[in-house]
Image 1 (tube, rainbow, N blue to C red):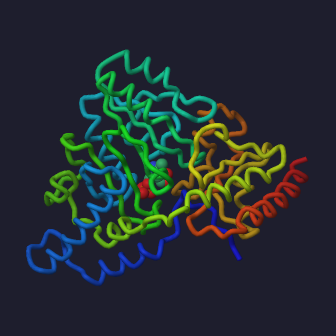
Image 2 (image 1 turned 135 degrees about the vertical axis):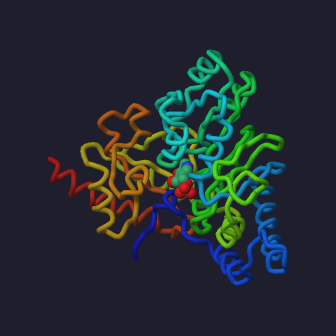
Length: 357
Ligand code: PLP
């Protein structure tokens, strides 16, 4: 039996999400049509909108998108107009690319959390900014101190955009951001759905103009079945604590040379970035895959190739930045996941360390 431990790439579909997708597909209709079928689709869409707002940021406006990358791009292009854009060095490529080469990159500390002193110094330097700080990192699971970041933003008239793609559904989201990006497939919904949550009253020009959908903020027919699935992708009570216990058993079972990135920082309950000095991440991923264990090398990138992690490099890991694998437990991880992973990892280490010697 294989062991899927790559939830941060995509969570397995939750049964309730699957049911909601199928129901919306069966119902059909375009939410913008005025006839009865359209009105039925509109009701489903608005129910999904209310559920997402109530769960993640009550009172915020929900602009539906087709994924997390689009939600981040919408926020950064729209809210960044006329502002300096500041991004953390460990942000996801979706954020770094939308911010562009002119953005100011903020350093992180060795534990992966945002360097607040550096942020304050840059904020004090100049005109109003848009700060992009992720709620939790996709490779290490490290949570940024969003409350402190938000307070600094307020003090300097800056807006705060928070990429919560990985943090959402894995414990309460921090408050204090002006906009929040979410992705359906990271919650256990289907791919093709996302949302940007906006503080009420915030002006946001559309990135994709069109038929005026989403109150003119995002043109295009809404991907209703995927959005209904996203709204229904809710964790079971106690899920985060169960995954944290499994994750802790994995970390406690690693011998001395298994280094965990960001271990001392607040982290997601399901994520562990494990470094094995001297063995390339790609080699580890392939060896574990052959043993039936699916992990990834830091971030999964679209080409399927493995690059040195910019996240680990920013945390000061130097050469080791190419030796980390990300273990991210899905909502349905089996109870013996820790023991099975440790067995496969130890066998891999014995073999690869020998051949490296
Ligand atoms: N932001 C973070 C932190 C992510 O981990 C990802 C996906 O890996 C994204 C954004 C992009 O989300 P999507 O795959 O929905 O485009």
